[in-house]
Length: 185
Image 1 (cartoon, rainbow, N blue to C red):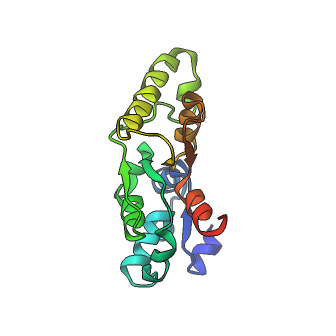
Image 2 (image 1 turned 90 degrees about the vertical axis):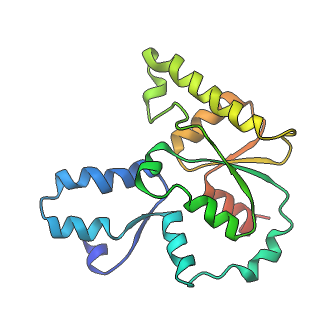
């Protein structure tokens, strides 16, 4: 990673837990404060970085908005609990709104999985109740579940949703969904 930082690359993360490790745990591993500062100033959640590009004018959406008018998906977003503590949680919402795609956001703080927490016997009931609460939150936002897409940026969040939904709706990482709508049509 040091070589990438020295060459002025930005490093983007799809998994919030890994970004959290870099921003908080690396401080205990890297004793060189200057190097640590350089590293964390070059590491971003992918949507945090896209928002920077958007706000600086490097990305311009007007030319692709017409392509997206054909999208009739209902989009719901559940943000990973660790990402909420790392960045402004509105980066995904802002990005999709700039694309002209309106999405509803989860009010649930956590999906209940929290890495391997939800797989442990003594926590399974808590994990399941939080997961089912999230699914109820999703369903309460829509009269009809057809064309419903749920975006969740944490792998544990997506696993939790898959566990309790019986494929009632599609579940994607937000980047995976962007790939679907732009490249896999």
